[in-house]
Length: 434
Ligand code: UDX
Image 1: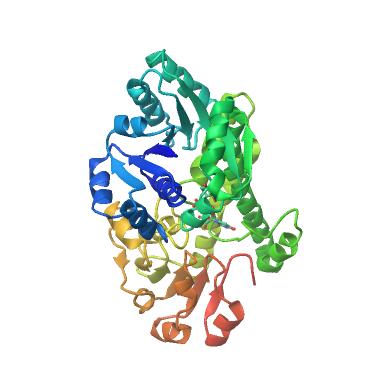
Image 2 (image 1 turned 120 degrees about the horizontal axis):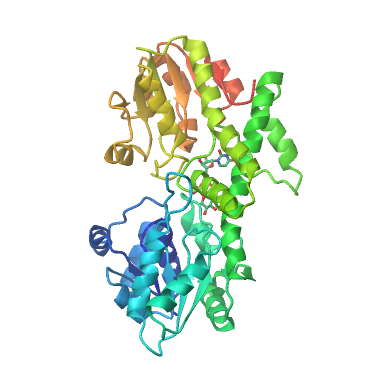
C-alpha cells in the first residue's frame, strides 16, 4: 500500500521504516529541512538498535523516501499518518498546535475525488480525532476522508521489534472503508487488531501508559516499605509477579520512571480527566511516589557522605533507560545535577547519552564527562549507578574498587548482585533491598 507519515521523529521514522520493511511504499515527511537532508544522506538522527540498517535497506529497495512536502506525501498515499510532537504545556495539558497545523495543511492539499484515511498516531487527548475531522472539513468542505486513531505503543531502545511484533494494534475508526484499509495495512504484522471507536482508541494510549507508570510507582512505594522493614524488593516483586494476573514486567524498583512518555502522559491524563470533570487523584499519587524515589536515594548518599560539597562522586548512566541515547526527562540527569548543585565534583559516564546531554546543555557546568566507567570512578568517594546499562554489570569491580578513594556503591537500579559486591569489599546500597 502507499502511505505517508507526517513527522519523522521517533514514532514517525521508526513506523515508516517498519511499514516499508513489510513491503509498503512509504514517504516520510518532515518540515525540518536539516533532518530531511540528514536522512537523504543516509544518516539517522536518533540511536535505535536496528533502525539504521532498516532505513538503508528500504531506501535502497525504493520502498522508503523522504521529503519536506506534505503535498507530495498526501498525493502519494491512501493512508496519511500524523506523527508530529504533542509536547506538554506548563500546566501539564497537551499542546496540540502541531496536530492542528498539519490537519490544516492536509486539508489544503487534498484533491477532489481523492479519498484518504487520515490516521492520528501521535499521543493525543481523547476527542482530538473529532477536532482533526472538523478542522479538515472546515478548511476543505469537499474533501473525502476519514479520521482514524491508531496509537503507538513502541518503547525506545526496542522500537523496531516492538513495531514489527506489537502485542496489539489499536484502530479507532467510525468508517468501514477506513477500517478495511487499516486492516490491510497491518496484515503483514500478524498481530491482533482491536477495532474501537475513535475516542476509545485515544483513551487507550493514555490509560495504558498511566497504568504502567502506576505499576512502577506501586513497586517503588513497596520498596520504601522493604527498606523500613528489612525485606527484599526483588524477592517481593518476583513473588507478586509470578501471579499471572499481575506479571513481573514493570515491577523493577529504582530511581523512578522518566523519559519522554510516562511523565508527560501521566500529567496529560490528569489534565484530561480534570477537564472532563472527573479528577484522577490516584495519578497524582503516582507522580508523588515517583519524585520521592530520587529524594530517598539522595538522602542515602547524604547519610553516608554527610556533606556533598567537594566530594568526588562518580555516576554511571545519563539516559532515562538503557539502550537509547535519549536523555530527555532522565532521572539520571536530575541526579547528576542535584549532586553538582550541592557542590560535589561529579564525573559521569554513559555509553550513548553523553553527546545529547552536552548538545542540549542539560548538565551542570561543573560535571566532568568521563572516558569510561572506570574513569568516572577514579578517586571517587562514592559511585552511583543511575541507568542499568548491561555494560555496567560487566565491569571488573575489583579494579573499580581499587581505583576509588572509598568503596561506597549506590545502585539506583538494583542491577548488581549485593552478595558479590560485598564480597569484593564494597559498602553496597541498593533500592529496597538489604
Ligand atoms: C513507554 C511505554 O513503555 C511505551 O509503550 C510507550 O509507547 C512510550 O512510553 P519508553 O518511555 O520508551 O516507553 O520506556 P519504558 O521502557 O516503558 O520505560 C519508561 C521508564 O520507566 C524508564 O525511565 C524506565 O527506567 C522506567 N521503568 C520501567 C522502571 O523504573 N521500572 C520498570 O519496571 C520499568
